[in-house]
Structures are given as C-alpha cells and as structure tokens.
Length: 418
Image (cartoon, rainbow, N blue to C red; front, side, top):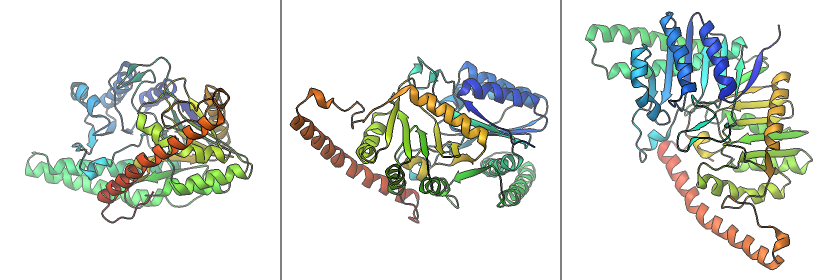
C-alpha cells in the first residue's frame, strides 16, 4: 500500500485541504496552533470546525495564550455561538516571568485518528500579517498532510495528553458543583492515563518512512537538534535549508561548515523582508563564519518567510521549530522527518523555486548587502569590516549572557545548553 504524504505550500493549499478533510470527518478532530488570526480564510476553517461540531463530532482546539491572544478576543463570540470551547496554553503571560516564555509553538491537526497535518502554518492567511496588515505577496510556509497511521496515532497521543492536562487545570479553577467536578475530574484523569499508555505503545521503535521529532521541557529537549545533527554529519551531496530564524548552536554550525568543506552544496534560505531587526542583527553575526566555509546564504525577498524545513540528501524535516534559542530551549515544537521519495522531491522543487526568488547575498549586521568592493578602496573595505565585527561582538556578548541567564531561570535544574 503506497504511503501518502503530501507537501502543502502556504494557507492557499493548507486551508482547502484541511476544510475538505474536516467536512468528511466522522469521529473526531484535534487541532493545536500558536497563532490564531481573525480573517476571512481562517473563518472558513473555523466554520468547517463548527459544522463538524454540529454533526456531533468531538472537536478539541488548543491555542497558545500569547500568540493567539488577539484572535481569541475577537472570536470569543464566534466560539460561544457555535459551541466550540478552545483550551488555552499559558493564559497569563508576564514577560518578566520565565515560565511564561514556554510557548505552545506546535501546529498540528489530527482527523479521525488517521490523517495528520504537521508543519509551520498557523491559522493565518498567507496574505495577511497581524502587525503590517495586507501583504503584497503570499507568505512562504510549509506543512505536510500524512495518512501514515502510526504517525497520526503518535501525534494524536501527544495532543491528547496536552489537551487533557489543560482540561484538568481548567477543572481545578472552575466553579462547577462538587458532584459535576468529581465526575469530570475522574473521566479526564482516566483519559490522561490512557493517553499516556497509548503514547508509549504507538511511539515504540519501528521502521517507518516518516516519524515525529518532538521538543518539550522534559524528556525530548534535544530530539530535533540531535536528528538534524546526525543527518548533517552524514550528508553526501546536498543540504538545503529554509528557516525563518536561523541561529544554530555551535555544534550545528560546525557540522554545516564541515559538510561544505568536504564538497556538499549547502544553501540556507533566510528572511529577506525582516519582521524584527534584532533577528537579522543576530543572524549577521554568523554570516562570516558560514560564508567563509562555502555556504550559500540566500535572502528570500518575495514576501515573508515562515517555513522551517531541512532537506539533506534524501531526508527531509518539516515542522514548527526554528533554529534559534526560543524554539530550541523554551517552546513546545513538533517536526516531521521523512525519507518518503515523493515528499523529498516535492520539498526540493519548492525550495529550489523559493531560492530562485531570492538572491545570494552576504548580509551585514544591519540587514543590508555588504558594500561593493569594487566601488571602494580596499583599505576602506577592511576598516569597515573590522568595525562591524567589533560592534557585533560588543552587542552580542551581553545579549548571549542575558539569554543564558533567562534560560537558567526558566530551568532551575540548569540542564539546557545552547
């Protein structure tokens, strides 16, 4: 029986596919996302969920309390009128409270225990940015629709555990009667216990074309990094990366540079239209090291880049995790890794096309192209390079120290490192 996994590019492919599966669902729908935005395309997805709820299906929705705060406020009446009761991960967010930095960054859907969606696409239109409004071109983002049963069961088991934990927390703060509370508490606790057993069973080792890579704050703190580093160490021909925020730790950078030096073609597609200036400043601090090793840095300028994808020879990794400290140290993340030939070919075609819409540029700390050496005397070029390196070092040293302090506060055990 052929394995059916399909690459979806942006909400323009993701939403119609998702709506079609929701309308054909017969049992249950589970959905997690970081960002919920109130726009016409998202409303069409929510309408499909409301129709499923009206047919008597179980619909479980979980949104991040920070990323979805605005959408939850504007859509509160919509959810209430249609009988949808979303749960919120980390409702109260205080910037100076380290525990509030742990965000639900996963983007997952499971339908009827057999269809799974994994990727980086939020409930947000490709043509809309929550801060800047209407975009001139669609955002570049990726997701995968998979009908591999073991993978769908694994994703559902993980989602059930989180939903039940949030449900227990909600019951503890509810004002329902004692009898109703006890009945719901027992039922929810039994569900959580069964979900844990099911998770252990379906996550048992096996030979599958695709598998999930998780990042959480307990057992799977380094799962995504380790899988990527293993593939980088054994790369033979090609490494192609699309990453919204690209700040890999030193070990990953060393593996990328070693691969380039042994003849592997390494291309990294990063944002050309900046959302946050500090992200480009931080990325620029690594550019010299990477470009000197022969790595091609490509700036995607068509629109915003939100994809998180790795293609290493015949292996792909697509999901929600950026290659930056927030994703790798604090957030709950989920990536799909696969050797499915059709998926590998589809991702290569998509990334090649996206790279063609950018241009290879050595980026400075200020997010612009490096000056043209032919237009300036060589001594002026050297002076400017030296000044920029020193300014970056001065600015990044306290930033890294603060980051390590924040991570230590968020994890008193001090087990994480970047």
